[in-house]
Amino acid sequence: MFYLAFLPQFIRPGEWVLGKSVLLAGIHWTENVIWLSIVTLLLARVRSWIILPRVKRGIEATTGAILIAFGARLAMERAR
Image (cartoon, helix red, strand yellow):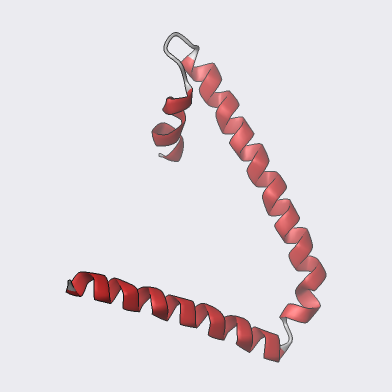
């Protein structure tokens, strides 16, 4: 669905739609593989630090606070 909604804006009238769509989807796929590989390698290097109980609690507390803030903002938005 993403490709059907996003890619047509980059295809000019008269261009080969299938070929251009496959090319653009291939570029997107390649970028994702590179990005996720970098993230995986970085996380593998810091894994021993991330699994420390103190760090783990900090990460969970931070993400929990962010989610609560988003929920509060959403609740306030609907109250208006």
